Length: 225
Image (tube, rainbow, N blue to C red; front, top):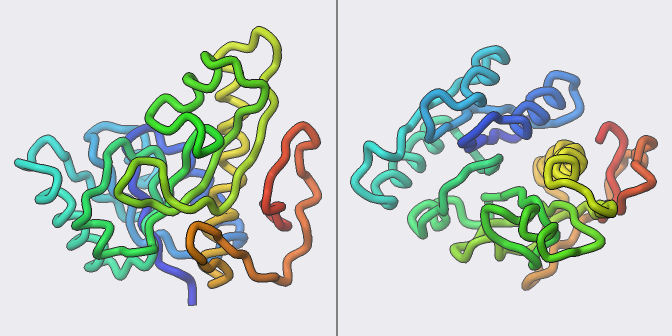
């Protein structure tokens, strides 16, 4: 039976769309039970509507504090039978209230190679620092921002004199591959955590045949991703 997930997003929803497309193609063994957006008018809302995915717009500015908002989130996710919360451009820190309710069942995507360059401008900060390699990270969520155990990372070389826009385009392309892959592994029950180490048990899928030779992705992607 497919794993019920909820996608929490604040913006245009390109990573949510990557999940929607993989589900539609029969490559991702999940049911997107709910998309929650905290910003009325955000692009992810229209994406959910076009895909026929239930979408709840829950404006955080109408709540007195973070905890009361997160209590409402927990209520909505429990009502939808959600097993895994997937943060996709969700621009809010989650409280202990939420993380306790979904302990070990919340993941996030960060546009840099953690633990370097945490925060909302990871890609920009990496470029400003002058790194030669950047990338993206899927990780479990803890109370401290961008601090949880790493599931998968993709490294992308930074070209000389590259703009933030072109670098982020290439990072986003990797995001749209590694995030659905991480969700698939979790849906298959193949991920376990030992301290800060994330272990992936063997599966039956073949390695992906369309890996980009200019990027290093680890653990390796599987067929369909």
